[in-house]
Figure 1 (cartoon, rainbow, N blue to C red):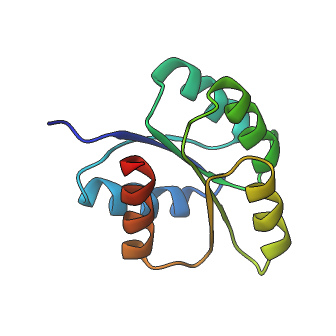
Figure 2 (cartoon, rainbow, N blue to C red):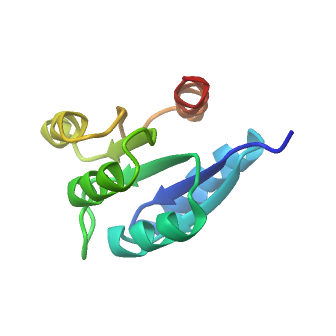
Length: 121
């Protein structure tokens, strides 16, 4: 059985590469976008099983991205991620449609466990 495809949206190229390595290492297929606008377009074309989105991004930021994805696909599992001690943004993201939130930096195994539990729902 093929593993689910996950979309990673983050303006930080190194963070995207790290997430791709962690997720592909756990058997998932991963597509990636450098901002919310590209991410929304990619989501609409690929329909991945789960989305991981950074909150603080140029162009279309994370909360707007999450709200748009939630309107497009009400049951889509979405993980909001953010760093720099911005828990207020992560709380807002979960209030506005994210299924879960992780503050950067987070352990790779915590991400993989969260992804697995959200996909199992």
